[in-house]
Length: 303
Ligand code: PPE
Image (cartoon, rainbow, N blue to C red; front, top):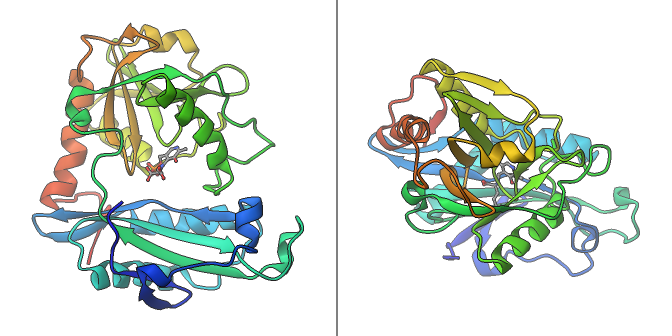
């Protein structure tokens, strides 16, 4: 990771090296945090944050699920995000707002711990490897399921959820795959450790439904929007595992991963084992918005 100069912490911009928390913070012991991952792009019209309003709203939603009251308004958090980018002099970067339960008392009861907020920004390139936006990645179906509904809520982007993601990711890496795809508790395709998934077959685009233990991503929403505009039929539906092997194209979406093609699943070749035409069209449309800054949908916040 490339360190930046400043981190916003509880209302102040402080030096990166000073942005520390105490070992007895509740979050360290019990995973009690909510967070976001946002990208700021250097467009031809200047630096712009993609889906800023949506991400900050999701941070509030995730926090609400865990009965965390964020001690800052959405406007304050957006302004703080922009102030952090400016303090670090980034043209393009990744933004990580984090809400966490800190000190007060230990024990599972979280209400005795204070709630703190930090926002870090740093420069982050491709997520799943170099050149993968073009060449695609090899993935496996994970032996770990995504957490079952009514266990850890997947609509909350909470720190603890990423223990499940870590198991999926480590297993994939141990076997030299770039990523693992988790099935939900019923055996239907859910999502990657940090991405949503789409499959294409006979020109129709399929993606799992929000009830299938997924984080409903904004990249996913953007892709569905663009796909419909380009005239594709998009179905949010149950996807059985073997539909992965029979897909013409598969791609993963996320703020970090953007739109990453999948070239094989469990060593089954997908399509021609390179980026397919539907993936390419969607990628082109998505990336051209963040590269040119031409934004017909008002997805960008220029800073
Ligand atoms: N599912 C999961 C589990 C997930 O973590 C992400 C984002 C998504 C789907 C896609 O959501 P969206 O970014 O709104 O399109 N994963 C973030 C964190 C990655 C990390 O390693 O940390 C990201 O892409 O920023």
